Length: 250
Ligand code: 13P
Image (cartoon, helix red, strand yellow):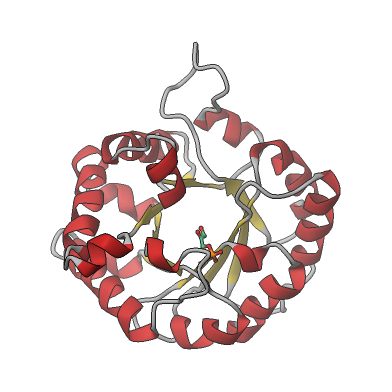
């Protein structure tokens, strides 16, 4: 049976109290015997609080970004070892907001992906096209380019311990979800591309869809052959909304 992952990216939202309450409520929402997993990605300052709320529960957690360097003179940055120290299991890499606003080039994303793998963190590699790129018919070329940078650095073997997230930029925070068919088409493209390199790794790779996922559309999206869960933004900010997505599939 396919394992579905429902992952919440809190983006730049939260407080001590919110992190404690939200992570606690999400962690207590697990249904016994369900194969659906949940993870949350709070801002750096709240990871420790989430770690406390998630202790002895099935809830996984991680950071929204990391620096690709091991240590040193990088004021304001956080490295992979620090995330392990905080007991993170995962880290988002190459979210479109970081690609667009914070100079995450394909190369830098590849370096971050490798830095995460090197310490045993599971990178959640985000890829996706802008509206302009989609309208120009460049969707597959953009995603192939984003994947190729990572493949060049870490090889297909790197994807054995990674998660992928297809997040079309035009669907993020817009309320405009890709249709299940639209999303499935790109997920299949991604899986086919990786299958050509290693069928086993590609077959086992979880490919999440992100972009305006909510309780009302999650089941239909996650029912697609190549959609193995979701990366949720806005609807991960309340336990009720986040658990409605989990409950739709668990
Ligand atoms: P929304 O669910 O708010 O569209 O955000 C998606 C996203 O960017 C998750 O990483």
